[in-house]
Amino acid sequence: MKYRNLGKTGLRVSEISLGCEGFVDHDGTLTPLLMDKAEELHINYLDFYTPNPNLRDRLGKALAGRREKFILQAHLCTTWKGDQYERTREIEKVRTSFDDLLTRLETDYIDVGMIHYVDSMQDWQEICHGPVMEFAKELKAAGKIRHIGMSSHNPVVSKAAVESGLIEVLMFSINPCYDLQPASEDCNDLWDDKNYQSQHVNIDPDRESLYELCEEKGVGITVMKAFGGGDLLDASMSPAGVALTANQCIHYALTRPAVATVLSGAHTLKELEISAAYESAADEEKDYAVAFALMPNISWQGHCMYCGHCAPCPANIDVASVTKFLNLTKAQGSIPETVREHYSALEHTAENCVACGACEKRCPFGVRIIDNMKEAVTTFGR
Image 1 (cartoon, rainbow, N blue to C red):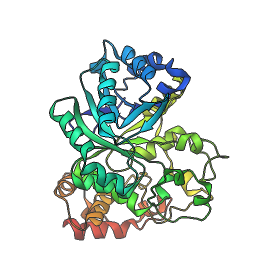
Image 2 (image 1 turned 30 degrees about the horizontal axis):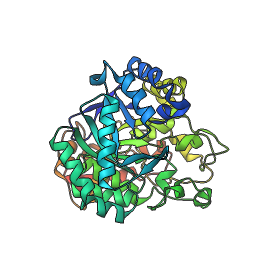
Image 3 (image 1 turned 60 degrees about the vertical axis):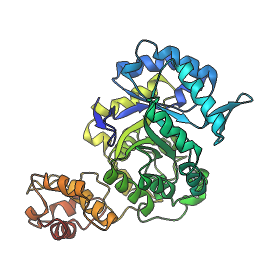
Image 4 (image 1 turned 30 degrees about the vertical axis):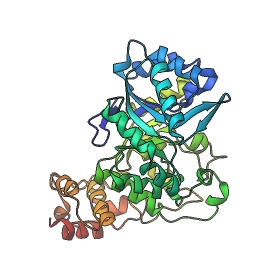
């Protein structure tokens, strides 16, 4: 298992992590087995949103004696009412549910406290200026949560949250189809087939700039919906018109800027093993570029997907990294200090480009790489 920094939190998290679906399925009976399997696979990060008291109890028992082995992302603002999950912003309900969470999980703290499901700008404004954010800050000051996070499907709302400096972690839905969709306050738009009927040229600019902003600000992204609820793994269900593999979906998410971990919504132990097998998969098994280039409903032409097909460069330039750093500066309209330092640390930079064109011949998306290298030299001075 490989590990990444979760933004600037100081946490090192496994690239593959455990989503909440398996804890919810089968009335939670798989919980102890999933935790055993996660430990065996060296997975150290997990997400838990459900307020169901029985499922909280089950996870608490499964964590007993090994709490320190796992980094726990759990959610504020989820409550249990009439035997059903309910999202709420009523602060007394939020407080009561969080106290119940700690008690039932038999822990004194949550590593990342996620403000749950913020998809509208009005909701975000009410949260950041209201009692929910004050409560999150209170919990952090008391050591009951170590870091404040937020979950969202809306890139515009997410950018506002990242810009505010109030959150350190963003849980966001990332996959190659969702990345085509513009911001919406209704996350059901991400699943609606009618939104994939016309051909798209590029990734939605708000989504691309969100990932770049998170990279700049040091906000770590934990990925949900990497498989689109399983639709992307089935050609008959996929909006792309072709089936992708789990390895391709995971690799796509992990190659977006700022992404630290992909939450595997494993409904079975086998599904978790399949996701974890990404780490030992051959590069060809992870490669999504050829599949993307052949998608009948979607075009990525002219857009760098950081897929690495441009390598190897005869001048030993890490072309994908140079392009990523260049795009980060374009998104910000300036050169962020961290981007400048990362670019300077490259052993070979764009000034080493000999314009041989080998990379452009290999690029499945027709990216004008030589032009990008020239622009990078102008931007960074070397």
